[in-house]
Length: 467
Image (cartoon, rainbow, N blue to C red; front, side):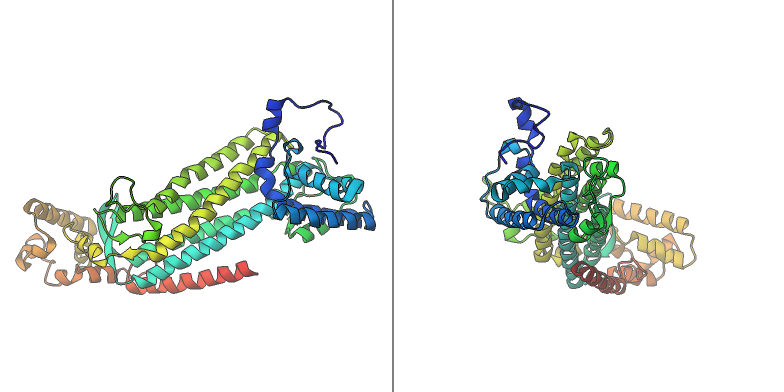
């Protein structure tokens, strides 16, 4: 086969050069060659089973496919822009090696069902890789939680000190987000797990192609059941990109926390040197660029989801060339996830925690205030009344530049007779933490239970992914 588009026949002459430049997608979709080789192998078998390709022809095409795959893996194939895409490129390479019989491999098949199959294979494979990286990140977070169960720091609301919390509880919060991200990528993978191959251009194949055989060969759980929908459906890409957007929302939040905490104003943590950079001008700088890049890539990943939704929103059934734009967002979000996740995991695993700075941040902000109100509530005071009383105490302390620790027993009782000698013990940081021992709380006992639960859940996920 010469370097001529498959569709030449109805049309004659060369394409306009400017149009040809945007018509070709080989620079983007060439990375689908492993999936396209797999699709070709399976389809060749189906054609032979249907009696549309002889055993001798099949053997020749199979040998040619082996050679093409080796050359592609070695980077020994010169991609031709005039062949437009990876599918035509591979078919041209087959013809060069197997001769005229290679043209039979496209019997009953369209690039429409072919590319949809390649993309679904790619999405399934990459979702599995992202899930594996998410499990690894979650394990790192759980491991750090186990190491930091004795570190108490402020929890923040509105970026203001709110209540004391174990740093371990913070690590586990992001482990929970990882579990949700895993579920979303698993859903995207499940949505991609339907085979469109054998649907032809838009109405089904006119030959006896065994699509259930194709599904088994390619590892698909089910078949696309409608030809119009199957060749034009890209919902699975939307689901994948939505999962990626959710993931980067979480990664960006984690990065933001650690960027703040690594500043001199907080100094709760310090990034390892291999994951930090310096300044070209200021010798003293130690910048958390690894986290800033993770945070920054969120914008691109969000944009990829919006780009795909916008491409799809007005398309009539069935296939339209607009769908050529489906690959770049998918590839870009995949690369971003698989590039950033190992870096964030390493940041978490090597993060130095400054326990004394975390403890110092508990002082001076009346962070015990809610515990004082809780103490009054346990003494029978309605919470709203307790809240008002403690608010008055904090107002007076703030005006005088004092803290709860400065209050003498008689001063406590002057605000409320229920504020007896026990209040000082109740508002110690360890006591405040220990009181929150219910499911989801920050008490050491609750955190220990969650570390065990998450470890078991991650082990089950790993076993499931290994099947």
